[in-house]
Image 1 (cartoon, rainbow, N blue to C red):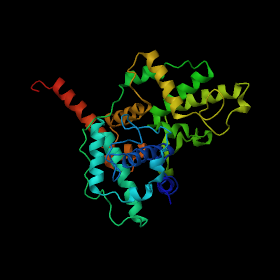
Image 2: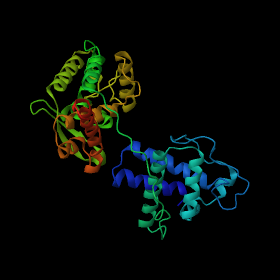
Image 3: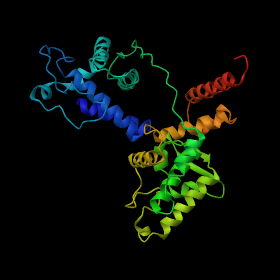
Image 4: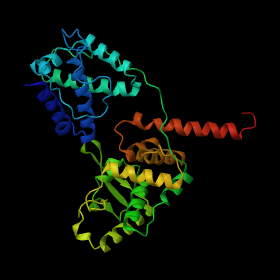
Length: 334
C-alpha cells in the first residue's frame, strides 16, 4: 500500500464510516498532503540535509493545490514507511515549521486535529503501535465571539433582493430560511422541495454526519418559499430544472455553497452592510436572537443541530455581554 492509498483509505473512512462532509474530507486531505510533503522535503525526511523542498514550502497550503510529488527522488521514497515512522519529535518539528509560516493558532489546531485523527485511525488499523500525538497538546486558542447582525440589519438585508424576478425571489427565500431556521449553508443547498412541510410549518434538515432533524420555520420564510416556487413554475424552462432541489441556479441545477456566498456578498454591498459577513453569520444571528428573546440553551442546541451543548454555549457569552452592557447603561450606580 502506498502512502496515497493509506491516506485515501483514511479519507474513505471519514466519508463512508464517519459520514464527514465532502468539504471536511477535502480539508483533511489538504492538511495531510502538506504534512507528507513536509516529511519528504529536506526538513522532514531522514537524511535530507540539503534543505531541498518537494512541496514548495514558501507558500501556504490551506487549500488543495492539485500538485503532486513528482521528482525522481520522491518517487523512490517509501512514503508509507515515512508516514508510519513519524514520532513525537517529528510532530513537534512540523508544528515549529507551521509557526515559521505564521499560521494562526486556530489553523494550527485544525491541522493538528487532522494528524491526531489520522494517526488514531492508523493505530486502530494496526499500522502503528503508538500514536505519536499522544503527548502533544493542542495550542491554546484565543476565544473569539461569533459575529452576528442586529435585528434591524437582518431586516435590511432580507428586504434587499428584488422579489419580482425569479432569482430575486429565490435569494429572498434563501436568506429567510437561513435566518428563520439557523441552518448551515451546506444544509440549505442540500434541501429538497419535499423537505418543506407547509402545513406543519417545519423543514427537514440533513445535517452533519447524515443526521436528520426537523426544525420549525417561520411564516415569513414559508411565504418567501411559496413565492419563489410559484415563479419557478411559471418559468418557461421549469421542466428543465432539477425537480428535487429546492434552490436551483439559473441553469436549473442545485445551487452550490459558493453561489450562496456570492449572492450574499452582492446583497451586503447593496444594503451597505459589513462585507465580511458570511452565510454562517445568519446562523450566529439566529442563535443570538433566540437566546436574547428567552429561548433556553437546550432548545437552541437542538435547533442548530449541535451534538454538544458546549458548542452552543458560546452564544451565552454574547447574551451575557449584552446584559452587562444594558446594566452599565441603565443602572445609576454602575
